[in-house]
Amino acid sequence: MADKVFDYIIVGAGSAGCTLANRLSEDPKNEVLLLEAGGKDRNIWIHIPVGYAKTLDMPGLNWRFDSEPEERTHNRKIPIPRGKVLGGSSSINGLLYVRGQHQDYDHWAQMGCTGWSFEQCLPHFKRAENFERGGDEFRGSGGPLNVQDMPSKAEVLDAWIDAGEQAGYPRNDDYNGATQEGFGYYQVTQKNGRRWSTAKAYLEPALKRPNLTLETGAHTTRLIFEGKRCVGVEVKQNGQMRTFRAGREVALSAGAIQSPQILELSGIGQSELLTGHGIEMVHEAPGVGENHHDHYLCRPMWRLTKNVSVNNDSRGIRLVGEVLKYAFQRKGLLTFPAGVLHGFIKTRPELETPDVQYHIAHASITDIKTRSLEKEPGMTAAPCQLRPQSRGFVHIGSADPMAPPRIVCNFLKEYEDQQAMIAGIKIARDLVTQPALTPYVKYEITPGEDIRTDDEILDFALRTGATVYHPVGACKMGPDGDAMAVVNPRLQVRGVSGLRVVDGSIMPQLVSGNTNAPIIMIAEKAAAMMKEDAAGAPNAAAT
Image (cartoon, rainbow, N blue to C red; front, side, top):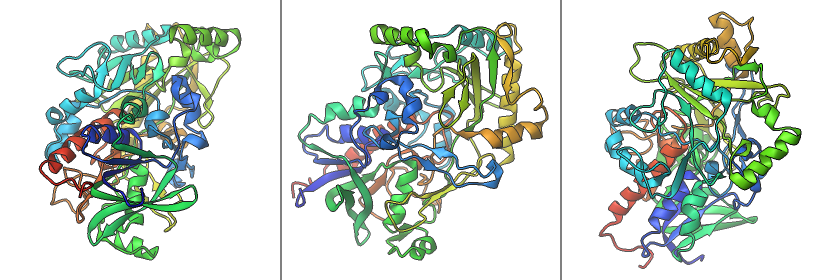
């Protein structure tokens, strides 16, 4: 293999990388190599949906990054889990399928990202998807990624939807269709009650093709350049250094944290930073590592009057019943994702579209890191601002490719982000006073009845909040006139050739919702562009 030249090398077998590997290997003339630093997706907790609570902090499956402590968020290190396994974060995430708002993609196009309007992205969403209800104007049928409605519902969550209507918010049974606004149950990337990651949906069937090669345990240390052309990848595997060569292109799909890290380790980034770490410059790119942003939420929780929460179902004989229900029906507690009920709302009447998203669950926890459930019944309605204005960065802290990068998030730095969070908590408090929910609510656990002013509410959010695990932006896409744009609208890295970035790091602005579905769409669209660009070109591997 040392002498073999692949047409395409893909770095990272996550949501984007598995999608690319499948689509690029559809053409038997393409020799495709997929590199993954983690191992195979054999752990049982990956495949049982509720297992996300364990995989989000499991060392063997997770890079377990942390943000740097910041005074604003009370000098806490905030966990930033990223998948280190086939399927990447799609193998450890909360399983929610959320595309975002149509306007998100239209905004990208208006920012100069030609070809990325919602109308132009929709065919790639639909191609990826098998929506179990069936396809229509907005939804796909027959694609690799299975999307189903929540297999189970809950009494108190039905009451949340009713309370939303009583407060003037619509019921919305398909927030991925014509409009996002309203309350309803989430749709999930499951099939027959089991997680349907990109490793299952895209990679597993593609591995039957002889032209796709997979290397696991292969930690990319740098990209190899000849002049300004990317010609291969260097990896550390089983304690040995190996190199692989690409005849056409390298696709960097290492994720929103590690794609900018790998670019900087390879000499693409800010010259002062890179030369300060002794890295030889390939191309000055001031935008690499900048524009990093993420969703941030906090967790208002309420004690319930009735034993209708996951807290109760996860203990004793009731847990035995739930295990049996899952084993024979693929329903119940073990199918629940990170949020069971969605709410997309406007915090101000003048807004055109929702600016806050709720992850609502009939559960309450004692500790954010361990996700230990309380013994008494509880529920949570966690708000986050959909389009945060605050920006941070991801940069290398050393030239050691095995060291984690520095991650600074600056959560809730901007006034607009603060106001949306405060409003989101206030609206949640109002919702629990609606007639549909009052029979269930005993008292407020957090922030607590003594937290009333805006300043107190904001301090609660800063003191207790966490990422929603949607980092994006540090290799942002943009037009030629944007000096901070790392990639062009065809996702090619500016200033060099033979290299694209294909993952969530290319988002110029975070979409209004969870990021797994949009990242898969990005990879579908990227694969189509790569095939277009290769059409008529000689097969490099053959030559």
